[in-house]
Image (cartoon, rainbow, N blue to C red; front, top):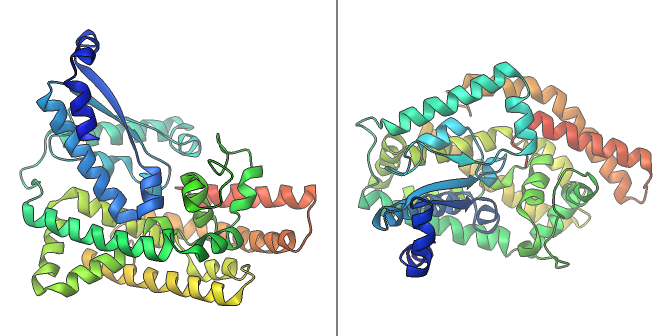
Length: 373
Protein backbone atom coordinates (compact mmCIF):
# COMPACT_ATOMS: atom_id res chain seq x y z
CA UNK A 1 0.00 0.00 0.00
CA UNK A 2 2.78 2.59 0.59
CA UNK A 3 4.11 2.25 -2.96
CA UNK A 4 0.60 2.36 -4.43
CA UNK A 5 -0.19 5.55 -2.51
CA UNK A 6 3.18 7.11 -3.40
CA UNK A 7 2.47 6.54 -7.09
CA UNK A 8 -1.00 8.02 -6.69
CA UNK A 9 0.05 11.04 -4.63
CA UNK A 10 2.90 11.94 -7.01
CA UNK A 11 0.76 11.60 -10.12
CA UNK A 12 0.24 14.89 -11.98
CA UNK A 13 -3.29 13.80 -12.92
CA UNK A 14 -4.20 13.17 -9.27
CA UNK A 15 -2.45 16.32 -7.99
CA UNK A 16 -5.28 18.65 -9.02
CA UNK A 17 -7.74 16.54 -7.03
CA UNK A 18 -5.49 16.53 -3.96
CA UNK A 19 -5.03 20.26 -4.21
CA UNK A 20 -8.77 20.80 -4.47
CA UNK A 21 -9.16 18.87 -1.21
CA UNK A 22 -6.50 20.90 0.59
CA UNK A 23 -4.06 17.96 0.22
CA UNK A 24 -6.26 15.89 2.55
CA UNK A 25 -6.68 12.17 1.89
CA UNK A 26 -8.57 9.42 3.69
CA UNK A 27 -7.41 5.81 3.39
CA UNK A 28 -9.26 2.85 4.86
CA UNK A 29 -7.13 0.27 6.63
CA UNK A 30 -8.76 -3.17 6.74
CA UNK A 31 -8.18 -5.68 9.54
CA UNK A 32 -10.37 -8.73 9.04
CA UNK A 33 -9.04 -11.04 6.36
CA UNK A 34 -5.37 -10.64 7.29
CA UNK A 35 -6.06 -12.37 10.60
CA UNK A 36 -8.08 -15.15 8.99
CA UNK A 37 -5.38 -15.76 6.39
CA UNK A 38 -2.23 -15.19 8.45
CA UNK A 39 -3.01 -15.35 12.15
CA UNK A 40 -3.08 -12.85 15.01
CA UNK A 41 0.59 -11.96 15.35
CA UNK A 42 1.38 -11.54 11.66
CA UNK A 43 -1.83 -9.64 10.97
CA UNK A 44 -1.21 -7.17 13.80
CA UNK A 45 2.44 -6.60 12.89
CA UNK A 46 1.85 -6.20 9.16
CA UNK A 47 -1.00 -3.72 9.75
CA UNK A 48 1.20 -1.74 12.15
CA UNK A 49 3.95 -1.52 9.51
CA UNK A 50 1.47 -0.52 6.80
CA UNK A 51 0.00 2.12 9.14
CA UNK A 52 3.44 3.55 9.86
CA UNK A 53 4.60 3.47 6.24
CA UNK A 54 1.46 5.19 4.95
CA UNK A 55 2.04 8.14 7.27
CA UNK A 56 5.69 8.38 6.23
CA UNK A 57 4.75 8.39 2.55
CA UNK A 58 2.04 10.97 3.22
CA UNK A 59 4.63 13.24 4.87
CA UNK A 60 6.96 12.81 1.87
CA UNK A 61 4.16 13.76 -0.52
CA UNK A 62 2.80 16.64 1.59
CA UNK A 63 -0.49 14.84 2.13
CA UNK A 64 -2.61 15.28 5.27
CA UNK A 65 -3.58 11.66 5.86
CA UNK A 66 -6.52 10.37 7.88
CA UNK A 67 -6.71 6.61 8.30
CA UNK A 68 -10.14 5.03 8.52
CA UNK A 69 -9.64 1.96 10.69
CA UNK A 70 -11.98 -0.82 9.56
CA UNK A 71 -11.91 -2.57 12.93
CA UNK A 72 -14.29 -5.36 13.87
CA UNK A 73 -15.89 -6.04 17.22
CA UNK A 74 -13.41 -8.78 18.16
CA UNK A 75 -9.63 -8.76 18.58
CA UNK A 76 -9.46 -11.20 15.67
CA UNK A 77 -10.70 -8.39 13.42
CA UNK A 78 -8.79 -5.46 14.89
CA UNK A 79 -11.08 -4.89 17.87
CA UNK A 80 -10.22 -4.60 21.52
CA UNK A 81 -10.17 -1.58 23.85
CA UNK A 82 -10.25 1.60 21.76
CA UNK A 83 -8.15 3.59 24.24
CA UNK A 84 -5.26 1.12 24.03
CA UNK A 85 -5.56 0.89 20.24
CA UNK A 86 -5.10 4.65 19.87
CA UNK A 87 -2.11 4.70 22.24
CA UNK A 88 -0.48 1.79 20.40
CA UNK A 89 -0.40 3.57 17.04
CA UNK A 90 3.04 4.13 15.47
CA UNK A 91 5.04 7.14 16.60
CA UNK A 92 4.02 10.22 14.64
CA UNK A 93 1.06 8.48 13.02
CA UNK A 94 -1.58 10.22 15.12
CA UNK A 95 -2.18 13.92 14.52
CA UNK A 96 -5.43 14.40 16.41
CA UNK A 97 -7.89 12.85 13.97
CA UNK A 98 -9.06 9.26 13.88
CA UNK A 99 -11.90 7.47 12.14
CA UNK A 100 -12.98 3.93 12.95
CA UNK A 101 -15.86 1.54 12.50
CA UNK A 102 -18.01 0.33 15.37
CA UNK A 103 -19.91 -2.93 14.82
CA UNK A 104 -23.67 -3.01 15.34
CA UNK A 105 -23.58 -4.95 18.59
CA UNK A 106 -20.69 -2.80 19.86
CA UNK A 107 -22.68 0.37 19.15
CA UNK A 108 -25.41 -0.94 21.41
CA UNK A 109 -23.07 -1.87 24.28
CA UNK A 110 -21.05 1.33 24.12
CA UNK A 111 -23.56 4.05 23.29
CA UNK A 112 -27.14 2.95 24.03
CA UNK A 113 -26.89 4.34 27.57
CA UNK A 114 -25.97 8.01 28.03
CA UNK A 115 -23.51 7.34 30.86
CA UNK A 116 -21.76 4.58 28.88
CA UNK A 117 -21.65 6.76 25.77
CA UNK A 118 -20.04 9.64 27.68
CA UNK A 119 -17.54 7.26 29.27
CA UNK A 120 -16.51 5.76 25.92
CA UNK A 121 -16.12 9.17 24.32
CA UNK A 122 -14.05 10.31 27.31
CA UNK A 123 -11.76 7.30 26.84
CA UNK A 124 -11.23 8.14 23.16
CA UNK A 125 -10.49 11.79 23.92
CA UNK A 126 -8.12 10.85 26.74
CA UNK A 127 -6.29 8.39 24.50
CA UNK A 128 -6.02 10.98 21.74
CA UNK A 129 -4.52 13.55 24.11
CA UNK A 130 -2.10 10.97 25.47
CA UNK A 131 -1.06 9.87 21.99
CA UNK A 132 -0.41 13.48 20.98
CA UNK A 133 1.74 14.11 24.06
CA UNK A 134 3.81 10.94 23.91
CA UNK A 135 5.72 10.41 27.16
CA UNK A 136 9.49 10.40 26.90
CA UNK A 137 9.79 6.71 27.77
CA UNK A 138 7.79 5.66 24.69
CA UNK A 139 10.37 4.97 21.99
CA UNK A 140 10.51 4.12 18.33
CA UNK A 141 11.09 0.47 17.55
CA UNK A 142 14.83 0.00 17.20
CA UNK A 143 16.38 -2.28 14.50
CA UNK A 144 16.84 -5.14 16.97
CA UNK A 145 13.18 -5.04 17.99
CA UNK A 146 12.04 -4.75 14.37
CA UNK A 147 14.10 -7.81 13.44
CA UNK A 148 12.70 -9.74 16.41
CA UNK A 149 9.11 -8.94 15.47
CA UNK A 150 9.78 -9.88 11.86
CA UNK A 151 11.23 -13.22 12.95
CA UNK A 152 8.35 -13.99 15.31
CA UNK A 153 5.82 -12.94 12.69
CA UNK A 154 7.41 -15.25 10.12
CA UNK A 155 7.33 -18.22 12.52
CA UNK A 156 3.73 -17.49 13.54
CA UNK A 157 2.67 -17.14 9.91
CA UNK A 158 4.24 -20.42 8.78
CA UNK A 159 2.77 -22.26 11.78
CA UNK A 160 -0.69 -20.76 11.22
CA UNK A 161 -0.68 -21.53 7.51
CA UNK A 162 0.34 -25.16 8.12
CA UNK A 163 -1.97 -25.89 11.04
CA UNK A 164 -5.00 -23.74 10.18
CA UNK A 165 -5.21 -22.03 6.77
CA UNK A 166 -3.90 -24.93 4.67
CA UNK A 167 -5.22 -27.71 6.87
CA UNK A 168 -8.23 -29.23 5.09
CA UNK A 169 -9.50 -30.70 8.35
CA UNK A 170 -10.02 -27.25 9.89
CA UNK A 171 -12.99 -26.26 7.73
CA UNK A 172 -14.69 -29.60 8.37
CA UNK A 173 -14.11 -29.15 12.09
CA UNK A 174 -15.38 -25.55 11.97
CA UNK A 175 -18.55 -26.50 10.13
CA UNK A 176 -19.37 -29.39 12.48
CA UNK A 177 -18.09 -28.06 15.83
CA UNK A 178 -19.53 -24.54 15.57
CA UNK A 179 -22.88 -23.02 14.51
CA UNK A 180 -21.31 -21.34 11.47
CA UNK A 181 -23.82 -22.92 9.06
CA UNK A 182 -26.69 -21.61 11.16
CA UNK A 183 -25.40 -18.02 11.05
CA UNK A 184 -26.70 -17.60 7.51
CA UNK A 185 -30.26 -17.78 8.83
CA UNK A 186 -29.73 -15.31 11.68
CA UNK A 187 -30.33 -12.05 9.75
CA UNK A 188 -27.50 -10.40 11.68
CA UNK A 189 -25.04 -9.86 8.82
CA UNK A 190 -25.06 -7.48 5.87
CA UNK A 191 -23.43 -9.99 3.51
CA UNK A 192 -23.55 -13.75 2.85
CA UNK A 193 -21.19 -16.04 4.76
CA UNK A 194 -19.13 -16.82 1.64
CA UNK A 195 -17.95 -14.63 -1.21
CA UNK A 196 -18.71 -17.32 -3.79
CA UNK A 197 -19.84 -20.92 -4.04
CA UNK A 198 -16.37 -22.22 -3.16
CA UNK A 199 -15.72 -24.09 0.06
CA UNK A 200 -12.14 -22.96 0.72
CA UNK A 201 -10.98 -20.70 3.53
CA UNK A 202 -10.42 -17.89 1.02
CA UNK A 203 -14.13 -17.91 0.12
CA UNK A 204 -15.24 -17.68 3.75
CA UNK A 205 -15.75 -14.17 5.05
CA UNK A 206 -13.93 -13.07 8.19
CA UNK A 207 -17.05 -12.32 10.25
CA UNK A 208 -18.51 -15.87 10.23
CA UNK A 209 -14.99 -17.28 10.70
CA UNK A 210 -14.52 -15.28 13.91
CA UNK A 211 -18.15 -15.65 14.99
CA UNK A 212 -18.08 -19.43 14.73
CA UNK A 213 -14.94 -19.77 16.86
CA UNK A 214 -16.35 -17.34 19.45
CA UNK A 215 -19.72 -19.07 19.69
CA UNK A 216 -18.06 -22.43 20.32
CA UNK A 217 -15.76 -20.87 22.95
CA UNK A 218 -12.53 -21.72 21.10
CA UNK A 219 -11.78 -18.03 20.32
CA UNK A 220 -9.02 -19.32 18.01
CA UNK A 221 -8.43 -16.12 15.95
CA UNK A 222 -7.34 -14.20 19.06
CA UNK A 223 -4.39 -16.38 20.05
CA UNK A 224 -3.44 -19.19 17.66
CA UNK A 225 0.22 -19.12 16.61
CA UNK A 226 1.31 -16.47 19.12
CA UNK A 227 2.52 -18.97 21.71
CA UNK A 228 4.42 -21.03 19.15
CA UNK A 229 6.26 -17.99 17.76
CA UNK A 230 7.15 -16.41 21.10
CA UNK A 231 8.25 -19.70 22.66
CA UNK A 232 10.43 -20.46 19.65
CA UNK A 233 11.96 -16.99 19.72
CA UNK A 234 12.73 -17.24 23.44
CA UNK A 235 14.41 -20.60 22.95
CA UNK A 236 16.84 -19.37 20.29
CA UNK A 237 18.94 -17.21 22.61
CA UNK A 238 19.21 -16.34 26.29
CA UNK A 239 19.07 -12.67 25.31
CA UNK A 240 15.74 -13.05 23.54
CA UNK A 241 13.77 -13.34 26.78
CA UNK A 242 15.18 -9.96 27.82
CA UNK A 243 14.30 -8.53 24.44
CA UNK A 244 10.68 -9.65 24.85
CA UNK A 245 10.60 -7.91 28.24
CA UNK A 246 11.89 -4.73 26.59
CA UNK A 247 9.16 -4.95 23.96
CA UNK A 248 6.56 -5.31 26.71
CA UNK A 249 7.88 -2.39 28.75
CA UNK A 250 8.80 0.13 26.06
CA UNK A 251 6.57 -0.41 23.03
CA UNK A 252 2.79 0.01 23.38
CA UNK A 253 2.24 -1.88 20.13
CA UNK A 254 3.60 -5.12 21.60
CA UNK A 255 2.04 -4.78 25.06
CA UNK A 256 -1.33 -4.07 23.40
CA UNK A 257 -0.95 -7.18 21.23
CA UNK A 258 -0.25 -9.34 24.29
CA UNK A 259 -3.16 -7.75 26.20
CA UNK A 260 -5.56 -8.61 23.37
CA UNK A 261 -4.22 -12.17 23.19
CA UNK A 262 -4.68 -12.47 26.96
CA UNK A 263 -8.29 -11.29 26.67
CA UNK A 264 -8.94 -13.89 23.98
CA UNK A 265 -7.43 -16.64 26.12
CA UNK A 266 -9.54 -15.55 29.09
CA UNK A 267 -12.77 -15.62 27.08
CA UNK A 268 -12.02 -19.06 25.65
CA UNK A 269 -13.28 -22.08 27.58
CA UNK A 270 -11.83 -25.31 26.27
CA UNK A 271 -13.95 -27.48 28.57
CA UNK A 272 -17.04 -26.14 26.80
CA UNK A 273 -15.25 -26.14 23.43
CA UNK A 274 -14.72 -29.87 24.00
CA UNK A 275 -18.50 -30.34 24.03
CA UNK A 276 -18.74 -28.58 20.67
CA UNK A 277 -15.91 -30.76 19.38
CA UNK A 278 -18.09 -33.75 20.24
CA UNK A 279 -20.37 -32.72 17.35
CA UNK A 280 -17.64 -33.63 14.84
CA UNK A 281 -18.64 -36.95 13.31
CA UNK A 282 -15.19 -38.35 12.50
CA UNK A 283 -13.42 -39.25 15.73
CA UNK A 284 -9.90 -39.16 14.33
CA UNK A 285 -10.33 -35.71 12.80
CA UNK A 286 -11.98 -34.45 15.98
CA UNK A 287 -9.15 -35.61 18.24
CA UNK A 288 -6.38 -34.39 15.93
CA UNK A 289 -7.78 -30.88 15.55
CA UNK A 290 -8.94 -30.39 19.12
CA UNK A 291 -5.70 -31.81 20.51
CA UNK A 292 -3.68 -29.42 18.34
CA UNK A 293 -5.79 -26.45 19.49
CA UNK A 294 -5.44 -27.37 23.16
CA UNK A 295 -1.66 -27.71 22.79
CA UNK A 296 -1.30 -24.25 21.24
CA UNK A 297 -3.74 -22.69 23.72
CA UNK A 298 -1.75 -23.97 26.69
CA UNK A 299 1.54 -22.92 25.11
CA UNK A 300 0.23 -19.41 24.45
CA UNK A 301 -1.19 -19.13 27.95
CA UNK A 302 2.19 -20.03 29.51
CA UNK A 303 3.99 -17.47 27.34
CA UNK A 304 1.50 -14.69 28.13
CA UNK A 305 1.60 -15.33 31.88
CA UNK A 306 5.40 -15.28 31.80
CA UNK A 307 5.52 -12.02 29.84
CA UNK A 308 2.93 -10.28 32.03
CA UNK A 309 4.34 -11.61 35.31
CA UNK A 310 1.03 -13.14 36.37
CA UNK A 311 -0.08 -16.43 37.85
CA UNK A 312 -3.55 -16.31 36.29
CA UNK A 313 -5.01 -14.61 33.22
CA UNK A 314 -6.26 -11.04 33.81
CA UNK A 315 -4.71 -10.97 37.27
CA UNK A 316 -3.74 -7.34 36.62
CA UNK A 317 -7.09 -6.47 35.05
CA UNK A 318 -9.54 -7.34 37.83
CA UNK A 319 -12.42 -5.36 36.31
CA UNK A 320 -12.45 -7.40 33.08
CA UNK A 321 -11.78 -10.62 35.01
CA UNK A 322 -14.77 -9.93 37.26
CA UNK A 323 -16.96 -9.05 34.27
CA UNK A 324 -16.16 -12.36 32.55
CA UNK A 325 -16.63 -14.26 35.82
CA UNK A 326 -20.07 -12.71 36.34
CA UNK A 327 -21.21 -13.31 32.75
CA UNK A 328 -20.08 -16.92 32.40
CA UNK A 329 -22.77 -18.46 34.65
CA UNK A 330 -25.33 -17.05 32.22
CA UNK A 331 -23.42 -17.83 29.03
CA UNK A 332 -22.39 -21.39 29.90
CA UNK A 333 -25.95 -22.81 30.07
CA UNK A 334 -26.67 -21.20 26.69
CA UNK A 335 -23.65 -23.01 25.27
CA UNK A 336 -24.85 -26.34 26.66
CA UNK A 337 -28.32 -25.74 25.18
CA UNK A 338 -26.81 -24.74 21.85
CA UNK A 339 -24.72 -27.92 21.66
CA UNK A 340 -27.84 -30.02 22.25
CA UNK A 341 -29.85 -28.09 19.66
CA UNK A 342 -27.05 -28.43 17.11
CA UNK A 343 -26.89 -32.17 17.82
CA UNK A 344 -30.62 -32.47 17.16
CA UNK A 345 -30.45 -30.43 13.98
CA UNK A 346 -27.47 -32.38 12.65
CA UNK A 347 -29.47 -35.51 13.46
CA UNK A 348 -32.22 -34.46 11.07
CA UNK A 349 -34.62 -32.55 13.31
CA UNK A 350 -35.49 -29.25 11.64
CA UNK A 351 -38.50 -27.11 12.55
CA UNK A 352 -39.34 -23.50 13.37
CA UNK A 353 -39.26 -24.02 17.14
CA UNK A 354 -35.80 -25.57 17.07
CA UNK A 355 -34.43 -22.88 14.74
CA UNK A 356 -35.93 -20.13 16.89
CA UNK A 357 -34.36 -21.57 20.03
CA UNK A 358 -31.03 -22.02 18.26
CA UNK A 359 -31.09 -18.40 17.08
CA UNK A 360 -31.84 -17.29 20.63
CA UNK A 361 -28.77 -19.13 21.96
CA UNK A 362 -26.56 -17.56 19.27
CA UNK A 363 -27.78 -14.07 20.19
CA UNK A 364 -27.43 -14.77 23.89
CA UNK A 365 -23.89 -16.11 23.66
CA UNK A 366 -22.87 -13.17 21.45
CA UNK A 367 -24.27 -10.70 23.98
CA UNK A 368 -22.60 -12.48 26.89
CA UNK A 369 -19.13 -12.88 25.40
CA UNK A 370 -19.00 -9.56 23.52
CA UNK A 371 -16.16 -8.96 21.03
CA UNK A 372 -18.02 -11.43 18.84
CA UNK A 373 -18.03 -10.28 15.22
